[in-house]
Amino acid sequence: MEKKNYFLFIVMTILCLACVDESSLSDSELAAFTAGENVDGDRLLSLMCGQKGSYERFSKLILSDEKPLFTSAVLMVSGRYGLHYSVPYVDEHGMVAGCVLYPLDESLPHEQQMPLGKLGIPIRIDVQVLNEQIPIMERYLYSVPFDRWEKGGLKVDGRLTEFARLLDKGSQSVKADMAERTKTRGSMDVFPGGYMSLDLYYNYTPYTYVVGGKLVTVTLDLEKMVEKIKNLFRPSYQEPLYWWYINDATVRAYSERTMMDVGFIDPGTSFCDCEEKLRDTFNRLAEDYDYSRLHILFSYTYTLYLRNGTTGAGSSSGDFQIGGAGGGTSLPSPDLSLINLIIRDVSGLNEIQQGLLHKAIEEAQNSNCYIDKILSYLSSVDFKFDSAIIDQSMEGEAGTTLSKDLMGNIIRKLNFRSNEFIQASSFSHELIHLFQTEQGMYKDNSVRGMMEYERVLMDDILFYAKVKGEGGKITYEEWNKKLDHTLIYGGDSKALDKYKCWLRNITQNGIPDSISNEDLKRWIPFWNNNSIPYSANRGYRYDVEYVPKALNKLLELSKKCFK
Image (cartoon, rainbow, N blue to C red; front, side, top):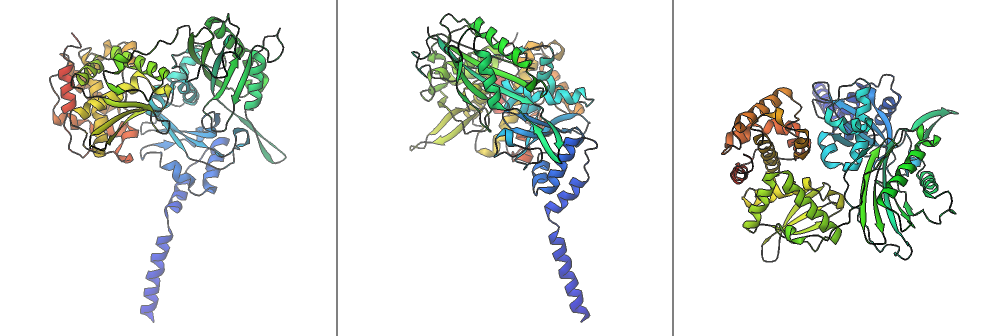
C-alpha cells in the first residue's frame, strides 16, 4: 500500500510540473512589472494580464538584456497602426534603444478602437527599423515619441530622435519619389487645368476621460478632417466644389495614408501657387480646435499634373505648420542605356518606375565610388539582374529572388515593394548582393547572414578609407551618403571603440590590400548584437563557411576611388 501511494505521489508531481506551462511562467514575469502612476502603462499591463498570449507576443520582441518601461508607455494613433500603446525599452546601459507598438482592435475602424480593446500583433521599432524599413515620410512621425521621452528625462539613442529634432527647428522639406498615378485618370477633359494628388500621413495623441463609469476616448474623425480640408481648398469666391475639390477621398482603418485627388486646378496654376495653397490650408487647419488638443502631426506628399503635361512632386513634414518641397521639374523619359548596364529586362516597370530607377542608379553611382565600380565590373562580365518588378507582397524595401528556368539557368529578379522604395540606397544594397553572388559566395540561404555582414564591412571600410582612418574629417554630407550605420553606431561602447580603432588602423594609408579570414570573423559577435533584423535569434547563421572573397575583390576594384 505504501509503494502504491509513493508511486501515485510521483505521478501527481509529474502532472503538476507539466501543468506549469509557458503562459504561467509569463504571468509571473508580467506580475513583476509596474507602471507606477502612468495610466496608459497600467491599462496595457491590465490588458496583457487578461488576454492570453498577449504578453508572450510582447516579450518575444524584447531581448534578454533589454527592459521595457511601462512607466513611460503612451497611447497614440497613427495612420499605419491605428490606436496603439507605445512602450520604450532600454538596453543594458539604460539608454532607450527602441519601442514596441501594441495595436488595439485591429479589425475595427480607427474611430471604434478603444484603449481597453483587444491587443493585436506588436511591432518592434529600433534604430534599424526606423531608418531602413519605415518610409522617409513616416520617419518624422515615428521619431516623435522618442523625442518626447527624451524631453521627459530619459536617455535616448540620438538616431531615434534626429528626425523629430528637425521638426523643432521648423517645417522640413524632403525629397520624395513621384507617386504612381495615371495621367488620364478622370480624363484631362474633366480636369481642365490638371489635378493634384495629395497623400497625408499622420499620428497624434488621443485623450481619455471617464463619464458615468465608462471610459471615453477622443480620437480623430478622418471623414470630418477630409471635409474640413475640402472646405479649406475651396476659394472663398467660388461656389463649393466648383474649382477646387477633393475626389475619391479614401479613409480606411488599415490605410497608411489618406489619399485624395484635388481637381479642377486653374490652367495658370504654378508649382509655387500649389505650395502656397497647401501651406495656407494646413496652417489654417492648425488653428482648428478639434485638432489642436490632439497634438496631431502630419506629413504629406503631393504630385501635381498640369494640362500641359508637366509633372511635379514635393513632400513635407511638420507639426501642422507644414511647409513644402517645391516641384517644378518635369519627369524626363527614362534613359534605358544606364539601366540596361545592370538589368536585362525592365518591361515589368512602367515609365515612371523606370525613371525612378534611372535616378536611383545615377545617384548611387555619384554617392559612392565603390558602387560605381561594382556596376561597371558586373556590366563588363555580363552578370546582371534578369528583370525588375514591383512586388507589393514583400516585407522589406527591396530584394532579389533567385529561381531556375526550364533549362536550369539561374534567374535573378530585382524586386521593389513600391515606387517609394526605388531609391539609391535599396538599389545599392541589392547590387552588392548581386556582386557577392557573381563572386560565388551565395550557395544557399544559410549564408544570407554572412552576406549581410560582409556588405556592411564593405561600406565601413571604404567609408573610412576615404579619409584614411581619420573619422573626425568625415563631413555631415558624407555621413548622409553612407549606406549603413549598423556597426558604426553600435550600442556596446567598448566593442564599438575597438571596431573603430580597427577601421582606423587598416585604412590609415587608404584602401587596404585585403582583409584576412580572421578579421572577417572577428566582428561577427559585434554584428550579431547590433543588427536585430539579421541576428542569430532570427534564424541567420554565422557558423557557416564563408571567406571575404567578394570584399577583397571590391578592395581591388576600388583602388583608384580615393587619392
